[in-house]
Length: 538
Image (cartoon, rainbow, N blue to C red):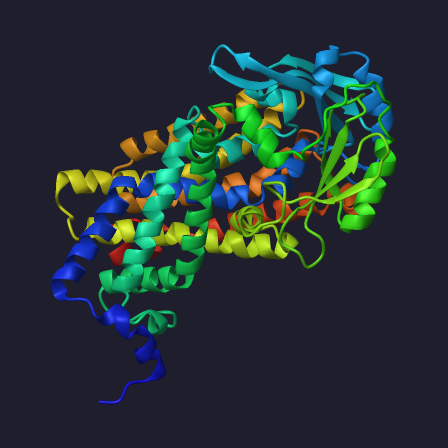
């Protein structure tokens, strides 16, 4: 018997006994059943979070006249430094919002009685980047209030929903970390179960029974998304467990539980202490110098020891053209001398630091701009299909059993209800933007959409009718959302083109395309194929 090169490469995957295959199938299926809907929620929200910055600028509605941190930053920081407690000059962070606004955070570290941990405590200002007018001021443990540091309530909500399922810390991170591990297990077991994995990349749908057709599409989508799924699962688990288990464990073992000392060792340069008063060098000069060296826009500025002789200024930049890892550069805060590019973690370049830096672009998919984000978004949609189609195959084998029929109904409601909830969150954000509290109404809008989906699942008995109802509602929500954004003070397309803010057009066009796609899925009741009337559409 002759073997092709593909057969030789995949031979180890085929060397599985029938008993082992049954166990793998059980592991693959039951892990998906137990946690599959939560995993779908993480992947679906992550697909939206890939475009979080674009959605943030789309929902903020303001016009940016200059690139982030290119305005008169130095004058703004100096003017506000005299208005805060001198203790808060220990650390200063500066970053740009979605409009022409700057966030300037003066803080030190204090024990938070609610969490029992040392956290950033101080004063954060949101100022007009052009005039320097203070727009908002917040004092205290500001990270506990998203309105204090975030410009877009919709962006913040979507990121929180993806990262920790809107659960309190650290439980949300632990849940998403476990889901990442489960996804890796599903990828490995699925890879072994696909005995002809290379051939499955090009499988064609076969005519005949409906179950075979669904299985073929599941195999095709999962085969193409296997590497991507493992990559996202690994990097996502890393982020979830690093802050909840990894770094606390390092702090406990190596620093006696002192997280502040660990943070200074891992993320800040070693500086001989010198509390002598000294004037900080011009931040405008340092930003221009750092941007020229990095070849990419600055995104964040950190000042340690403001007003002291030992002050250090660290500037973060987006990856340089052709690069993957963000750039981090350090300067002497008084002499303004360049101290060099710093690793993302640790004090000297290392393989670990390089891998740590790669985690961010590989997970969020922003290393090649909108092109890589579009690829990540498309693969995310494919993964959502893989999860739901796999669950559907598992449920259909047990059709007629009340418990499994109820799970199938829950799968249908979750599959359509989650994107509907995200859309109603966007609707609520737009409606509340002119005069309401967007940070309250955005999650409330999500709950309204999710609650309406559950209610529809309880009231509409026929799955095919419920599916069409969801599809038409999603189509209308997508198509009308750009009009709602305009009606509530959003930027027009002409203004967006004039000021080079293409994110507004990008998100609007994606919503229109999504609305058309959802509407195309719907079929009049009389035109539906008999095979679809008794089961949800794919």
